[in-house]
Image 1 (cartoon, rainbow, N blue to C red):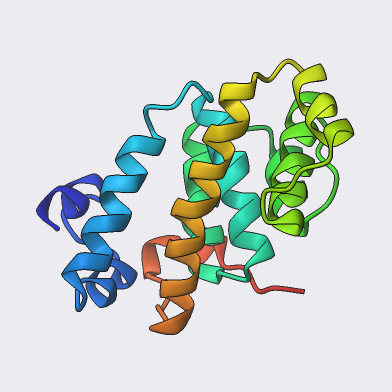
Image 2: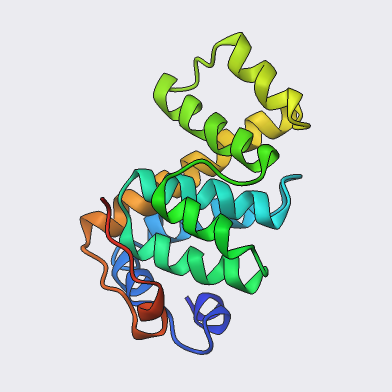
Length: 165
């Protein structure tokens, strides 16, 4: 938890502290997240995936935290707003990613050939498709656990507060 606290300016978010009541869950998430961070998806693409999963799963803390992450990446405000609204994205490539994430979730991985072709047609690879599965799994774990423990929003993320529609 020390490394996580360091990442957030010396204090672990309340959600992390609550998840730490199950060291196995917290360590599993942290390990999966570290692996996800090494994928060939760009940092922006990973954040689009995370925000798509977080908004779909109604995780207010995840949306707030990853809104801040997108701002640190200098993501366009229109992109951030669309992700938070669960609306079509202004970038065709990123919209293809968002759509593919939803398709994978909707079909529990049994993605129709035309949906996979649309994803790869936007410049993604079959490897990226599998990395999407890794990201969905990682952030489904996080969003479900945060909701289960009713993780509160830390003051540092208050400007990014979000509530599911």
